[in-house]
Every structure is written in structure tokens, then in C-alpha cells.
Length: 221
Image (tube, rainbow, N blue to C red; front, side):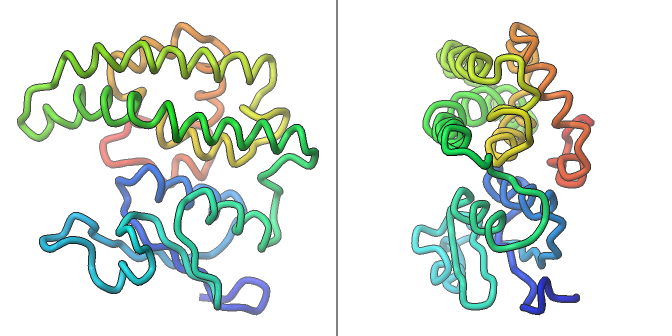
């Protein structure tokens, strides 16, 4: 496939079901960057493949390669993608905006991913699909934390169309895969209705071509 800017085509290593792989894929698509995607099974018998452990010493996904640049962790990959390639900018131009964007990404990683995805989505949707009864206590314990995250995000978005201000940013791309899973659970969809600004933001996100092109298996458009 043609290279970008005369250099080799980037490679993204990950899995279609992975929140953090999808974050990186969204950044690449929003920048209109051609990228080869290689699936890695980190849950393979015996652990992640040895080749992948050389890319990511902790055996997680995603990992990324572009010429002599090798990165892991979605946030690092996305910043590189935004800064190394042409295309629409995915970070605010001002320091305050970038600070807000970084704060939102940190919030999502530290406080939102576990309750919204691992506790609510996995227990309500994924576990029954695999023949296991949901852990109702775990779901109930996660709901207040998910509410706190939604409330914090709603305060930050205010009347803006996007999480970090007037333009789409890496903060929105970081949040989207988490919300894709979260809103598939009845609790997630109901909680989102309590914050109209966040519900409107999520509608805008679902209409983006990059989000549609990377839907998780079973995700409702």
C-alpha cells in the first residue's frame, strides 16, 4: 500500500475487541492514515506471542511501529500519530485546551474504564453471552463510580460539542470505545440519559465515519 509522506506504512498490533486498540485505530482513521493492522492474541495458551513481548514488555495491546519508531500504550501512539502525520489536528492548539484533553484522558483511564467497561458492560452483557450469570453486586458497586465519571465529564464539556472544546480531540477518541461498550448495558444507557450534554456528545460520536468503521462485534449502530 502507498506509504504516507514517502515513508513506510505504519503497523498497528492489537485486537478488534480491545478498547485501547480501537482508540489508536480511531486516531489513524481520523487522520486518514493508511495503516496495516495485525491481530495479536494476548490470551493465547502460554501467554502473548514472544514476538509481541518484544514490542510490548507487558504483553498488552496495542503496539505500533512506523519506520524506526516503536511505541506501546494507546495515548503515546495517538499523540505520535497526530504529531507525525498530516491531517486534521487532534489536539487543541492552546495549552489550556491540551491540559483539559489530557485531564479527560487520565480520568477515563483511572476512573471510568474499570466501572463502565469491566464491571458494568462485562457483567451485564459479556458474561451472559458466555453463559455466566452477571455479578449483580459488582454492577451495583460500579454504578456510583460511573455516575461520578459522567458527572465530571458533563461539567467539563459544558455547552461545547466535544469533550475538550470546540473541536474533536484525542479525548473524544479515548472515550468513544468505552462508551460503545458501556451503552450496550441497560445500566449504561439509562445513566447516560441523566446527562443530556453527554448523550448529545455520544450521538455526535456515533455518526463519525471512523467510529462506524471500527464498531465492536455486536455493537448496535
